[in-house]
Image 1 (tube, rainbow, N blue to C red):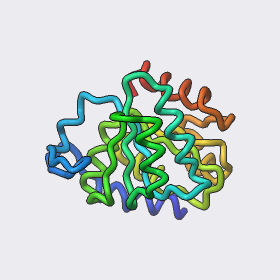
Image 2 (cartoon, rainbow, N blue to C red):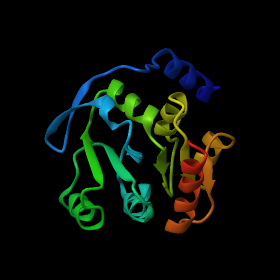
Image 3 (cartoon, helix red, strand yellow):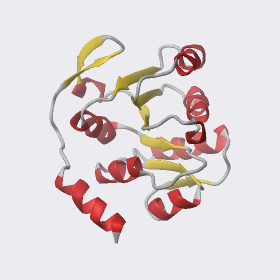
Image 4 (cartoon, rainbow, N blue to C red):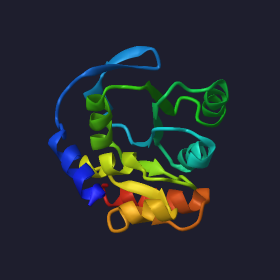
Amino acid sequence: FYIIMVLKILQKTRLKNYSDTTVLNNEKIAVNTVEDEDYVIFLGSRAFYKRFDLAIEIVRELESCKLFVIGSPLSTKELSQLEKRLPGRYVYLDNPSDKIVRTYLNQAICLLYPSEGEGFGLPILEAFNMGCPVVISSDPALVEIGSHMAAIVETQNTASYVSAIDKLRLNGS
């Protein structure tokens, strides 16, 4: 019941095909200029159990793909990991508007959600609402939310996630 209500609320706020500007890595650009780039999104908290470290390694193994990190400010450690493992292949958005988040979700290969301990997973529902494919871990809460709509990765390793994302890319997400 609650998931249905949240989806109905999200459907009422769904926005598509609009233009806006945002600051990406200190450069003001039009949101609609990212359409030709392949990227996956890591949205929300980057607490340890969310496995941001694994997300970096996954994107590192994907050819010609960027990681868009959306959420709270990056810590010094996170920024260092990104610079070391994905130089020039990540974009960080510091708490952008819902409108901008929806635009990026609408154009992404997928939302990458390798969390190992989830309570609910609201970003997954937002991605579904925007028609954005979702790749999740086999965490029970995530499977309950995404059971028939998400690509569920059974093994928490880079190769398994890369395989799932490559399948989405091959099918044109």
